[in-house]
Image 1: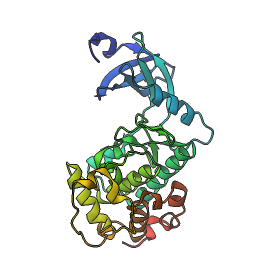
Image 2: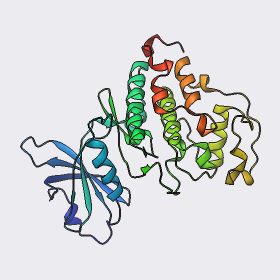
Image 3: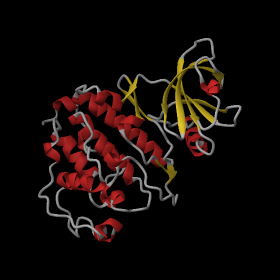
Image 4: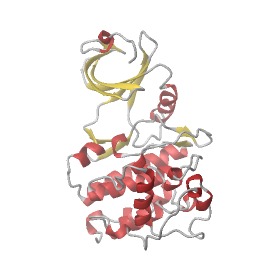
Length: 301
């Protein structure tokens, strides 16, 4: 953190009642450390320190979500505190890994495990959306894993559904096509789209879209969704980027061609990734889809 004595955040330093062990990450806005709790159990925990001016909203949202009696599949925040420099800190339970780590290790997930993770993700999103929040950055890095339990983490991009915050949300491989094309409003359907991308990534073992530019990603999305028409998405041609580009024909949708995907999962993804964001399933509708009504091992590829 800028102009700060390194000794404040070196291993062995006690902050928030926890002993720092080693730094895991520095995003510029926040530093993440492995630490040891100060209670008798001496459990390993994760501490996130925010740069000045950051973190207040994330702590506010997590205070509400983690303390709600109906909380489902949300990262467990143990406490928050201020450092001597009045920087905000958050202490979290330590999880075994995250979904990004599993995909990065090229571990082949069993269909039954994918189904359990997806159900947990959607139950978490259903809870978040019922609380009138939009996460805005659903991706494997922000999905923590303990055994067969998945928890949604990192609420740094989260907003109320009534927010007019227009900073582009999310991460390109999980960003909706309308937001890549310049759409500015926050919608719960952006979380639904990103969750569908996570489902596809779990089946094929890597990002569903791995392109490096907006235009390349738009093309890859269209190869999956097929051609759009004014009937399937009347508002598309009005989006800012559409005023300066032309989209060539791409053919029919290809959800069923995602590596290892089942018929039911492919249909679910299609319903979650409609061109028109108003036609995408809501979280509660996703959980009622045929994909979750029988064991994944019994579903056909």
